[in-house]
View 1 (cartoon, rainbow, N blue to C red):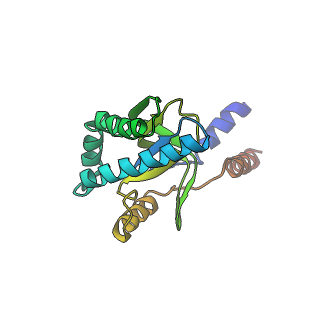
View 2: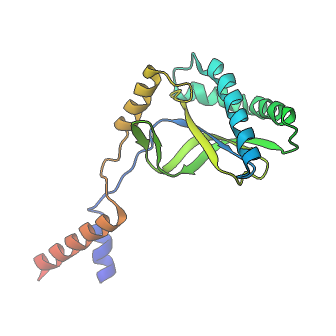
Length: 184
């Protein structure tokens, strides 16, 4: 009986969360050694420089996704160039998909934790500290206009109902109690 009441009241409290239309770049270092982290930043600089040219005329998420999907091999090759210059024998692999990210802060705004489309570039074991940015809209290639576009996308897709899990349980419990009072 209580299970039915809980299910009934769960339908009253809707928690929705929309993911902003973003594509992120995530680079994972082989390890946290100073050398691996330094190499990760060299790879980052090279990849961001290479991709900025490809993305300069991209006007949509779909167009950016197409660019990325056709560039995964090139991203790996570009990263291998840097690894080779550094004398590293680590492998590198680029993946495109949906990946989970924690809340991240970028200057004056933040991106909520959640699942985002992203390119993940894994160097070696990929067990080191990572680096991320937003490829579309192009926040990796920061200029004032791109930052405003990302902020607008985030604000436009903010959570419709922002409830932390504990608060959601309290609200559900209050609805159950309220419902039981009307029955009795």
